[in-house]
Image (cartoon, rainbow, N blue to C red; front, side, top):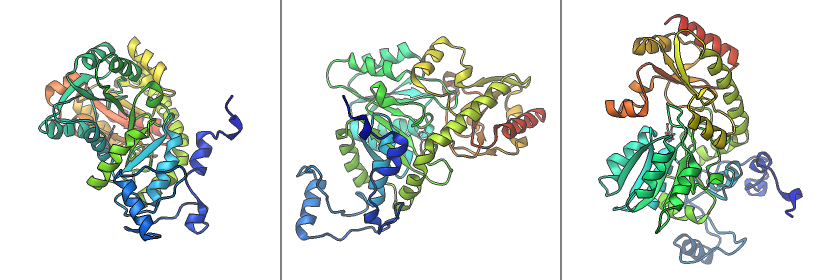
Length: 413
Ligand SMILES: Cc1ncc(COP(=O)(O)O)c(C=O)c1O
């Protein structure tokens, strides 16, 4: 039987592992190390560090390696990468990037080569879709979009895609909140013969608190840390995590080449936010659920897209199988089209009309004319995005104040 006495739980581990105060002159919390380069303890240590970095040698157990240069790694990225691991259930290794997009780019570039295909769910974050369609496709990778939530169609596409390298799932989808079954996609990958494609999940919307893709068989979890992980709308960052630490090696060497590591100050800031991710997300989810379940009865609201308000049996099944809580994002569909949506945005007082999500402050935006404005009419129709929708990312304010604010803005519509 495992010795449970020595197994720390994530809220404890995130505050205790990966940081040695003696390396920060006794400071109880990590210091910031802004140096771009590091002094070697000996020429032999420098030679060893370069051999390890280039893959010419393997790290011995408990070996301490000299730091080299901050584009490769630095103390603050090392501390952050150690401390973030316990937050992602099933992870053993992490890498931090200067944006969510650079984490996604490194993952796709590491595991796709020209001639291969990538199956991805739509709607997906606009930047990700553009990366696939305007960069990877001309580079020789075939992008195959599949509708989020269509469990059977997704499995069929995965089984039949030619030379499939990667399956990229974003769930729930933004702004429609449609959920895709991660385990079913993993099962479909297992049914293929030949080299096994990797399943990657953009877990920005629900993770790390409410959805655990590695436990469902996914290979790599990706984040825009700009959102819930950092939580204050004041920094850009990205994270990749895996159960198999080997998967991070290729991405680490691409990150060194691309120069997309997260800078020391941002690492330090993000590290300070990790112990409160679950607290913030729990409060945000409770607020969102209370507000959405009340606003849905408002006469000026046509419907609300939110996990506890799902009516489709398959969507309800996926939510129950995959998510611990419903999360803090909902999309209001107003009666009265775009004028009603714009009136609502003009009249809101507490929430801010801004893109992005996951911060402690409530943000609202009109997806059709902002975050998703690059879609064609056919893509809008297929994704279920229309002009009467307003997307809400709920913060940690008192939910009763937010509800009154939404109600007064609806009255003004
Ligand atoms: C789901 C999702 N993935 C990735 C990104 C890209 O992250 P970043 O803006 O940090 O590059 C975003 C940004 O909005 C997002 O919402």
